[in-house]
Image 1 (cartoon, helix red, strand yellow):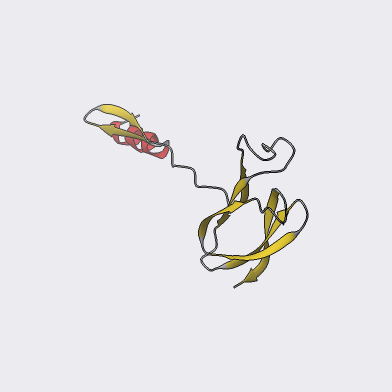
Image 2 (cartoon, helix red, strand yellow; image 1 turned 60 degrees about the vertical axis):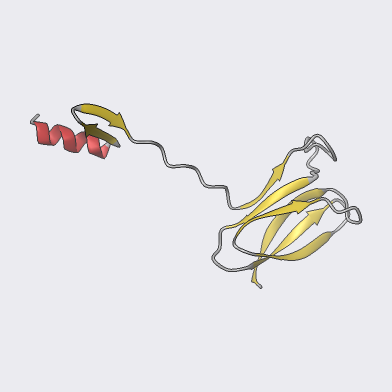
Amino acid sequence: MNKLKRISALAACGVAVVGGSLVGAAPAQAASPCGFYPITTGSLGGGDDGHYEKGTYNNCKSKNVTITVKYTYATKQMCVTPGETTLYANPDLGALTGATWTKKYC
């Protein structure tokens, strides 16, 4: 295999040749997942039972969306901007149990 073909094959595998040395390409940084993900704390619920004091909703859309925030005793509609929004338990509604996109923009 000639030198050009070897370099092409290495480049296809994410490996670069720099000054005669092989250098592996760094993996792409993983983005936060879209949707709700809980944050386990040592306080309210602790998360082991599906009840959380705190969580994050990551809106991956380019527009504001309406989400339904789920608590122990009720649900609440909320408009969130693109990116991450921190959600908290509500003393009147209970521990945070999840959040879902309502398929509506606000």
